[in-house]
Length: 255
Ligand SMILES: Nc1ncnc2c1ncn2[C@@H]1O[C@H](COP(=O)(O)OP(=O)(O)OP(=O)(O)O)[C@@H](O)[C@H]1O
Ligand SMILES: [Mg+2]
Image 1 (tube, rainbow, N blue to C red):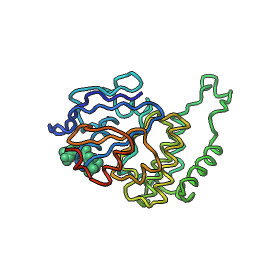
Image 2 (image 1 turned 90 degrees about the vertical axis):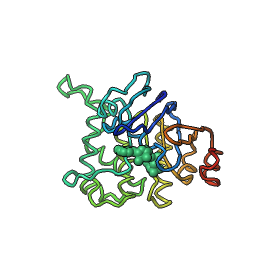
Image 3 (image 1 turned 135 degrees about the vertical axis):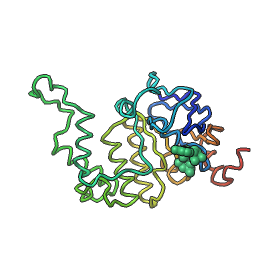
Image 4 (image 1 turned 180 degrees about the vertical axis):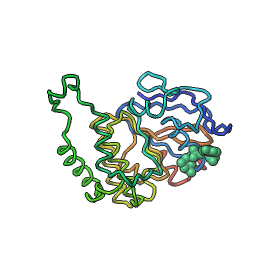
């Protein structure tokens, strides 16, 4: 379980989160909505350990360990994955070699101490991995030739978002945080991405926090809970009716 307890976060000496409480069980999908500037991205960055955001009070417990003092790298190794709103480009590194490196890091050969002589069947070879990743790309309607290009180099907004999802599939985290993964996506892409996320959450028992402004992606994802954030706090939580209220009344219903 991912438990955020009374979290206070500041950046440049300005308090942005003022006591966020949120509990996400494995396999659950939680949507976080809220007006611009309410602190949603700050919450996502704070969870992933961005150095610009200081936790001044409270706890983030990942499967019963407080991870507030851990580096982004340690948090990632423990299974926390943040899909970026603005993914970086690495022109010299192809998507497929990048994903293969991630896969190898996440799945070290268990029999390495035996000189690698005993093959672990659950680990894919490079050829098997390439086939698998091509199938995943196809399911997301991502052109296979993109896998051979430099990571996010000249990719469209939607293609970058799909690469984030591919990365998530390879990374195989326990909890994922998706910050506006749906922004700028066409309706077919939203549907494909949402279906992929819903499927992995269920099949692999992954806890999901999805930050969004719109109901479209949530219609496909069917979140278990919906939270409304305002001025650095979750001020209301509920079910699908919250999404409908936001859609029809904006955030005026908060008051
Ligand atoms: N690095 C920073 N320096 C100064 N202020 C910041 C910084 N990061 C966030 N803030 C401020 O904190 C507040 C919350 O920002 P945040 O990006 O978390 O909002 P958000 O809910 O994600 O908004 P949006 O819906 O527009 O994405 C804003 O007022 C923002 O200007
Ligand atoms: Mg944001």
